[in-house]
Each structure stands twice: as structure tokens, then as C-alpha cells.
Image (cartoon, rainbow, N blue to C red; front, top):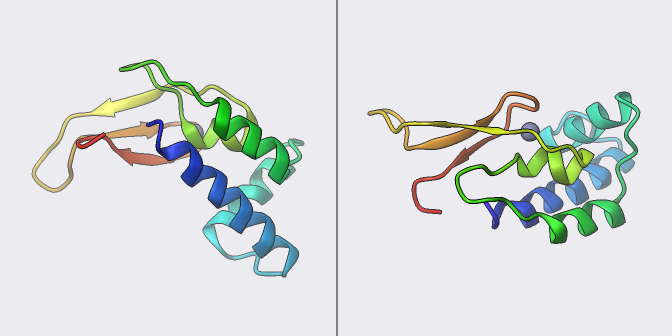
Length: 103
Ligand SMILES: [Zn+2]
């Protein structure tokens, strides 16, 4: 999960850039817009600080997206691998899904 935090920070950067350029339909822009609607301002500086500070506990990681976007620690729910998808971790708060098999 540790390597997901910089990826989520990149989403914040893309989302802010898309937002500023009127491309509101992208997934990253929608994530930023959702946080702003909740009253959580999203800034590049704060997201970068949080991405650096992301420190998950093995087996009890919290959602990198909720953390980087909103400074919220949402527990990830781990799912066993099945035929059509690998082992993954899912956030029920923001809907993020992370493959965990090779992390
Ligand atoms: Zn989340």
C-alpha cells in the first residue's frame, strides 16, 4: 500500500489541473470535486505532505486515497483472490480498489 500514496498524490495533481481547465468529467477531477463538496479543500501542498506521511500498518492499512485526499483514515477491507480477480483491498468510503497480491 505504501507505493499507492504517491499515485494518489498524482491523482490529486491531475484532478486539480483538470478542474482548473474545466475538464470536470475525469475520475480524478470528480474525486477532487467530491472532497470540495464535503467541505474539505484539496490542495497540492497538503496532499503532498499527506502522501509523504502515509504510514500503513502491515495487514491493517488505511485507504491511501482517503488519506491523501481528505486526511481520513478509512480501513481497507481485504478480499481473497478469486478466478476473475487477484487479491485486493477495497475502501468502502471512497470506493478505491487496490490489488494487493504483489505488494
Ligand atoms: Zn478510501
